[in-house]
Image (cartoon, rainbow, N blue to C red; front, side, top):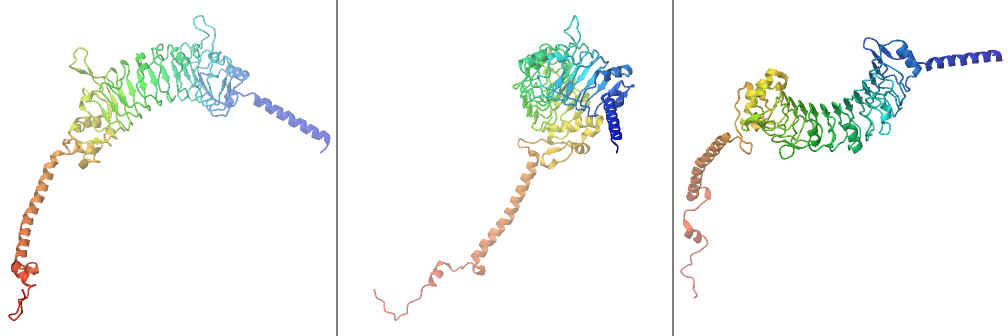
Length: 490
């Protein structure tokens, strides 16, 4: 090939490559992502984006007049978040990237931002500083992100929080810190959380917490939902005394073994409607455990494989006007499946007919007279309201009924008998005793004639077993009489 032609061809290739690079450098967002005007969503998830869009690219987006209320950048490969230009974003999803650095004032221009999801990244304590969340000047609040209500920081590498981390979020209501290795809520972290005056939802699940500081909820008095699932708590946190507006509480997967008058009961949470205590090491729920939860409508105590006892007065309390009268919460939904319960007291409920859901499946029930009310009264209610929940309610004792479903006993109109302290049915003892006596009588009737027959045979000498000639005859067999001519020497 001639040299001039080769140079021309090389020049053409360079120009083509430059043009391609130039075009690829500018990313038209709505061509790369899915822009959905009907839902006002820009969906850029799962595109392996490793660098945030430039200001020029965002300006082009603004010029296109495409609605951008929701911006999804989750499931990409972003590592850094620069400062955003002016955008009308209300929901920004950065979930599941590799973000370890956020520029100061990163969200300064997102004045309409209401929800920010930074979960499942590589953020540390040093990366989360107050300046990251600083907003515009306000005469009433210090540089606020004045519309940010939801902040999700779960699944990061946060060990502690700066005490003033949330100072630019005056209206923050929802905070998720779950799956961070905080382990101990130190003084600075406690100050940070307690400073969120409008906090309504707090998720601190799976943080390996052994205790909750009592001062944590001194200031956020409007907390409505608290998730403490998957921690290492061994007792009901005293900090709950300072959550008067709490409506939903999750304490699943903790190491709480005992609840009751001697081990600590739930404080007077007069607005609590839902309580979940599942997958714990609970062994016993004692008297008065839930008695102060006067608004409780849903109780979930499930999959506690060591829980064998629930006191009959676990829910009740003495009446304020008349101590002789018991008062109960307005319970509607009761979940007690997959525990180790053998007995359920009918006195636990003022009127079980008011219950909408009752799930008592997969427990080793003792089918005796104490649980007769379950078959006669509770089971028909379960069948009426939730027919699928009447199966797998099975007898574990006594032996005669092992494996039998209570539903079958209901259809047979069986009346369960009472067991003694050894879980035996004493009403069967009479039958057993009669059997023993009959057996002994038979032996006596057969044995006496046999004994007499043996004696008779022996005396008669039959079959050579005896000789009736007596002892003298026996001796003569070994003695020979002397002849008359024998010589005797004395």
